[in-house]
Amino acid sequence: MQWYQRIQQVWQTKEVRNDILFVLLILVIFRIGAHIPIPGIDTGNLREFFASNQILGLLNLFSGGGLENFSIMMLGVGPYITSSIIFQLLVMIVPKLEELSKEGENGQRKINQYTKWATIPLAVLQGYGFITLMQRQGGGVSLIGDLTFFQYLTAIVTVTAGTMLLTWLGDLISERHIGNGVSLLIFAGIIAGLPTALQQTLLAFDISQLTTVVLFALIALATVVGVVFITEGQRQIPVTYARRVRGMTQYGGTNTHLPLRVNQGGVIPIIFAISVIIFPSMIAQFFVQAKSAWLSNTAEYIIQLFNNQIFYGVFYFILVVAFTYFYSAVVFKPDQVAENLQKQGGFIPGIRPGRPTAEYLQATVNRINLTGSIFLGVIAVLPLILQAYTGMSTLVVGGTSLLIVVSVVIESVKKVEAQLEMHDYDVY
Image (cartoon, rainbow, N blue to C red; front, side, top):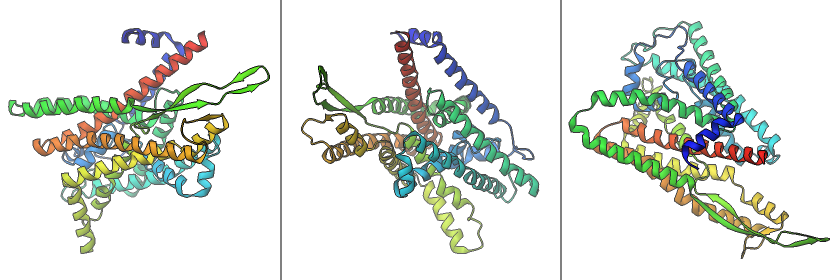
């Protein structure tokens, strides 16, 4: 089926069309909220500051410009992502949470509820941190003006409410099965910033930068091809179901396969890595002017360390690889898969059912993740390598943005196609 026929089919399928229109409406609400400033905040000096700060510029990109506007949604879904990372770690080390995660949908719903409750204090802390940081910048002059205690409190409450609203909107999007709500909100923020970035690039362009633009275009193409290749790649494990006879009916006796994706986390490892890599520099900013000499020197050293492109690139690469393994361990449970296969009379040829099957699946997943995570990490740091030769810091944002945009598009297209197939089965 041609692409235009597929689009026509999507539009003619009422349920899918309504879901897509609903998601677009949510994204429009998000974009409107990203341009509503916090009451009492002077945002006149913020744009230039964010344009000159690489770490905050990256944060501003994922908030859809909400940070430089000091909008009610300036924190984006960052606190929720941090809370999700914390609880996914806790599930692996806290027995009660691990038992809760095994209770199926009901247990997962409780963990999600705990994650959202933990988002509130994290949003309060992050909101306080950003406002304090903006007041300490600009050569001793606050970038957001002098705030009274009431204005300070109002700003923190407002941005916390904005984060919780975005979390709720993300859940509404996820319920429509068009894609992951958090990923689509980040995707919308990136897409919204592309026209401005393109305009700035065109205004600053001269013929001497032609080589740089060509190299960036090649990197962008390699990123798109690489992400599609990794996202679509999978290892098919052969599975055979034993033949069983009950009365006059025969069950089983079929051969099928168990698909293992090369990158089971999709775009989530990238988002996790970015959330972590910006954290040390952000915290260090608060202690640069500390009265204690050793604390101030340590904060300055951390900032300089993360401004070092070699260290930044290596650390970013390691985080992408680590979070790919981490997320795979969260979403894929070899013991449960092996147990389910054994209960259903299935087995992997040449592998004994039970524990040996679980060990085989774990070893296979580890080998797949090694290839997928390294490939994803290399694609992530390619723009940094190009920046080292061109001196254009915008390439860092561009490469990371492409990774997220392409992954989210692929995921959303797959989910729309799955809904179309389900609708076809219902019709026939």
